[in-house]
Image (cartoon, rainbow, N blue to C red; front, side, top):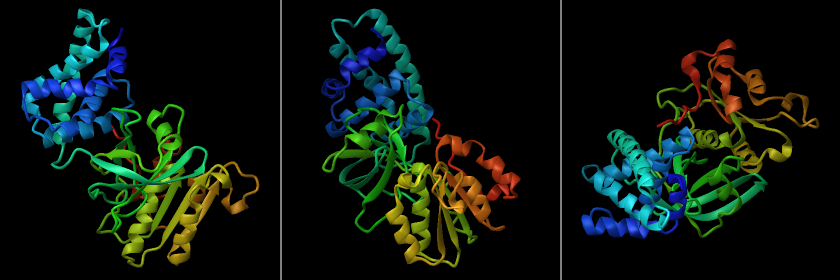
Length: 356
């Protein structure tokens, strides 16, 4: 048995053991309601295996949780309780060799959490959010509307760690597709990908009435500069549309005379998943131009046929600020292409790589 196997045996039912051990050793250290999420996230971090962005999301919530509850002085107690819970659920296959492997991995996890807590800001580590709406505009994408139990303090363009109890301990970054609303609801766009276990659950399984958890928002380089008033060229691919649509809503909430061109990339017309919302925005605002870009649709108009960034460059004005968000292949050479087209480096805005 590996530490990953031991974790799989413990993840579903070990949270009660974890909290009871903590409560016996340090009464009042951790609220019982927070024990399952902390247990799942810390166990997942210890086992490892997440990609860098997933690990960064884990550490964002764990660092905030340790800071929120003042857990750093008792980190060893928490680690011991985690090991005890996993050992209890993995019996009779728990061995001294496995215990040594877990202890070694636990020390690495503890060091990572300490660094994350040192960087974390004050505030709640996570907030429950009820799914109140679900739309499946195409087979691989879901639009989820959630209502957090407490208002989520995000800005347009930021990313938020999210998890579902269907996959305990796994967190994924999502970007709200809207500005903060009076009713506090948040719209999340999710695409299911082959390696994305959280995204698969969010797209195919989650239903209205279920709870998600949302962690602390983080800047990723896509927020508008409040001092700039230049026109905007926004280039979206796939669900990279979400943060850029939020920027359009931000401009709409306080028009300042700037023009906005939003180029939305999709393979075919059927993949243009948010078309109704985009049409509504364009009809409401004469300063907004929405340009579809179809990479694999032979029936598209010639001006709309091609890769999103290529078409976007045809619409670029000399003084535009350019924001690009989409899948990794789209972003891989975006900066070089924009620089080659004459866009100054300080006017190029791409999502930063989310790393621990």
